[in-house]
Amino acid sequence: MGIKARVEDAEALWRQGRKEGAWAMALIAAAATSRKRYPRPTADNQAFKSFIRDVLPTLMYGKPLQGTPNPRIIFGQIPIEDIIYEHLRCNLVHEGEPSPEVAFSESKVVDGKLQATLVVGSPNVIPDFWVIHLLKAVREAPENAAEFRTAA
Image 1: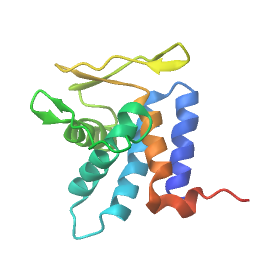
Image 2: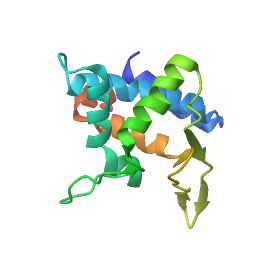
Image 3: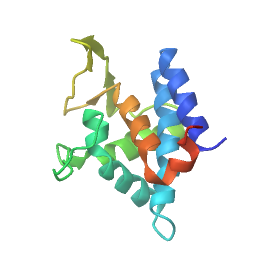
């Protein structure tokens, strides 16, 4: 099973329109990947947030940015990695639903690309399709290469 199974579960849930479930599975896959990248004694929350910071370009744009420092996203005064950790990951795992501090904007296809709104406020609104980008980051993480290697 492992990370690859969580990614496949998330993709299946996304296709069924079960977006919160897709996020839960994607966040579990990201947490497991973060632990590989940042082994103990790094605390779980620090490992997870560091991984999210590492993959922010992919999370936002669906691909890494070559030759450009990773962007920082600050919602008010809270970095996006804190919001994803505390209001999505922790709430989904411990409460079974996202925090009221976070909502997903509904994506739509415009000129062949997914688009959605990003809003800073109460609640903070993030594009629902970022989950697809997070899954891509997990798939492409060097730590997961063996799990996602395709048979030649």
